[in-house]
Image (cartoon, rainbow, N blue to C red; front, side, top):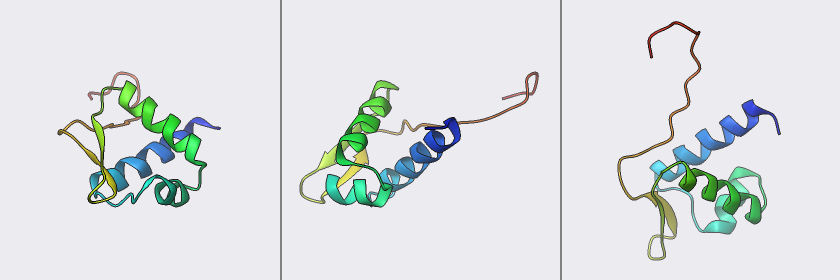
Length: 81
């Protein structure tokens, strides 16, 4: 998978999680056009980056447990960030 596709996947997952619009794992994987195992691998990678991702059995959606999010920025060397 190319870096740009991976970044796009992370951004899409981040958006759905932030909106609490993932649905259960099978639906979330379908929305992401990935297998269930790939979904879980990517969620684990995101958690490994320090993001608190939780699942609500009542609402059947993933959500952020705190204010931390993944932000990916591309900048020219020497520019302020």
